[in-house]
Amino acid sequence: MSKPLILVTNDDGITAPGLRTLVRCMRQLGEVVVVAPDSPQSGMGHAITLDNTLYSKRVVFDTDKDAPKEYSCSGTPADCVKLALQELLDRKPDICVSGINHGSNSSINVIYSGTMSAAIEAGIEGIPAIGFSLCDYSWEADFSPAEEAVKKITSEALQNGIPKGVVLNVNIPKIEKSGLKGIKICRQARANWKEKFDKRTNPSGKDYYWLTGEFQLMDKGEDTDEWALSQGYVSVVPTQFDLTAHFAIQDINTWKLNEY
Image (cartoon, rainbow, N blue to C red):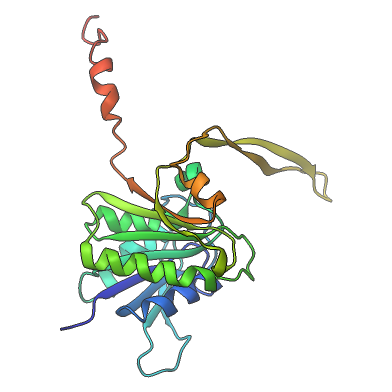
């Protein structure tokens, strides 16, 4: 039987160490094709390119005869998945994995994440998808403690499938491999960013702003991704791209919307 086809992408760019780690892990599980941004696209969310040209080119990082095909793309993470599915792949992938992101995408961070948006784009197209993130923002981060969890979760997803309409958001704590306690299925913690803009002036006298902020966790539950990460567990949050607040429909139906 043919190996499963695994589409690999990210938002930190095709040269990012996290992506190179993910490629290495996925080559142990199946046939890999990489389509990733040619430059960092962190915080792009689900942006797509509409009013500009989109470019892609074949790139080579490994001269091994069995090395995966790799393509850089001038667009966003979501663009990369769209282009891969419509133009670059000769068959539908069995799974799409995005990452490994340099930094956390737990809790509210998932809203802004280019890593997760790439995975969600695949999910929208009916492809099982997982976003992986390591809670270490350093470019020199040590991704080796994440490798076994990444391979285990992906292998289980390939064998068992992922529920329709669901994409997995996986975060790995910044911790030594020996300190990892295991993997927990979690809910997204309730949190936000208390943000402010640092106003500065450039040498020519023009004002500019630098976004800063402090992460605020309002959730004390012990079933959340933030709790799991703080305790040394890999967190797995099943996320969905149907944003309907189903619980609110009945209440809002009591509004007198058709009375003018």
